[in-house]
Image 1: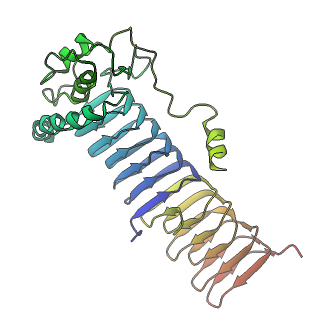
Image 2 (image 1 turned 135 degrees about the horizontal axis):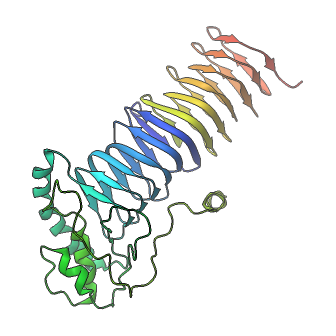
Image 3 (image 1 turned 180 degrees about the vertical axis):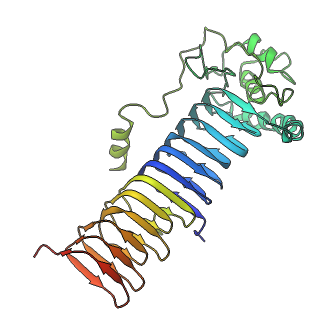
Length: 233
Length: 104
């Protein structure tokens, strides 16, 4: 049953390098490097100050480090990622925060996967829209993960849509001047399906400067360890 | 079930610190510290100093072992290193080379 699954439990810290051919589930904390052939899942309360690489990587917690997958990367609601994200397919859900360079597709497989993409992404925003999640993911498609003007700016639900960002978001980002819809396009914005092999995704002017300060907290702040152990008690 | 499991296919080079049970089925090199129980299952390879609570060994450990509670070396276990624990059992069929310190 767990012959091919490794679990880093909630109260566990691993410093160093994790390798192998198994699936890995991180509920605790990992620092260093993770390189497995199987799937990697980072739980909502998991923390990784590490580069993660695997076949499919699913993030619900906080990561500081690069993510690489041979198949797909899914950043779910609650994910906080500071680092580059590279995979043939990348999904970023509403509520996920990313600061870094995102690249989808690579080599030949890209065209087919990229085509499949828009349909999928068109479906998700609808659901996301209902909940009108406050923090929409904004993927600053930049080469440098470094200080991005306003990464993951949180469009307040009532804020007027930012025309710049939405216009570029493409496909069905039609005139949405309604606040709660403002988060919708940014959802789609993440995977530029049209440029599968091309390197840099859309040049979205990383959002209006008038937004609130970036809510992206560093994946692991300096006292995070202490805070974590406190929480545990 | 333990909350931390190092599965059979996994290798960890480095340091593991845990507040909970740890089960090792794969390979660990470096250091393994747990506040709770540690189980080294058959086929597991630990090349690390191990410290923790109750420690059950059925795999292989190369390194020193410290336990606040007890250490059980089960048949098939292979331990090279010193063991410091309040209680220790060595089953028939376990291989062991090292000192035992039971702080009498």
